[in-house]
Length: 219
Image (cartoon, rainbow, N blue to C red; front, side):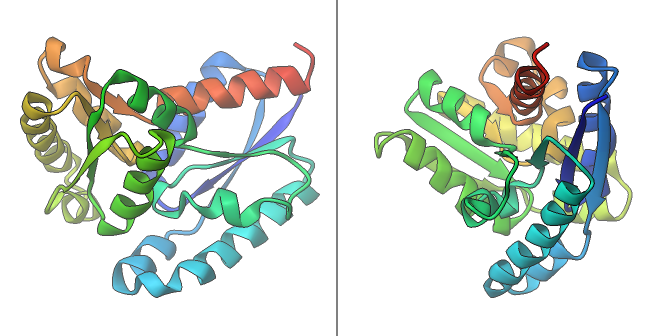
């Protein structure tokens, strides 16, 4: 049985990612590391990002000591942690929005990036711009009130606000990218035709994790 680790900054990503990966690879052993202090810290002061990276690197290094074969960084707000960790780990680290960003820039030039936290908008928007080689027209959209609703336990309101913003963006843009894994459920609330324009990171990231895991284990 092979082992992987997932680094989380919110409990909202644990169940969906674990379920999706286990459905594809039932034999996989998943270690979840969660630090729910990171997002509130970044929301209060984005200058603490380097400290957040230091904390995540400690978790990743500890995961290595437990014998994991690869690590998934599951938070887009700290997406640039993948660059920070480069050369500091002996196992591959996958950025959750790496694969989906490739798809986004292939689907169209006008890309709306939706997030519930301002800390996610810059790294996610910059990633799309970089993958698009400067040709992507990125429109960042902060979904006001959605993060607060989720923190208060009102996931239905969280999803409704995201779906409303995504529907509006889909009328004006070629692609609508939901930049946080916790936003994925909102896509199902949109009309089927609109859903074709909406991307989120979980599916492509799980594909990337599973494919790499199988390669490492010669499956």
